[in-house]
Length: 99
Ligand code: SF4
Image 1 (cartoon, protein in one colour):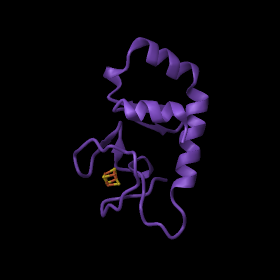
Image 2 (tube, protein in one colour; image 1 turned 180 degrees about the horizontal axis):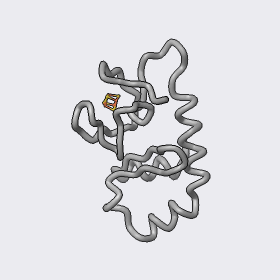
Image 3 (cartoon, protein in one colour; image 1 turned 120 degrees about the vertical axis):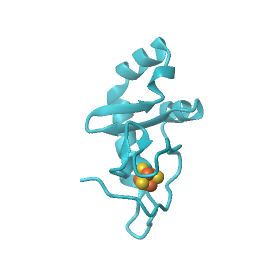
Image 4 (spheres, rainbow, N blue to C red; image 1 turned 90 degrees about the vertical axis):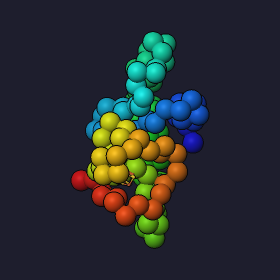
C-alpha cells in the first residue's frame, strides 16, 4: 500500500476519488501543509487509489470498498447515513456499483 495513503488513513482521514478529484474527509481537519502536500502529489495519490481500486476486487470476491460504491458521496454513505472508515473491503447489502 502507498505510504502517503497509509499515513492519511492512520491519521483518521478517509481518502478516495471522484473522477480526477481527491475526496478527503474530514477535509476541515487537514492542515495547510497537508493540503499543499496533497496538491503537489495529487497525480501520484490518484494513481495509487486507482491501483487499489483495480486490485481490490477479484472476480469471485463479493466484498467492496465503499469508495467503489455509488452511495459514497463526499466520504459519507447516503444509503446508511454514516461516514465509513474505508480501510477494508466489506460485504454490504446496499452496495451499488458505480458506472
Ligand atoms: S452502501 Fe454499503 S458499500 Fe456503499 S457506501 Fe454505504 S456502507 Fe459502503
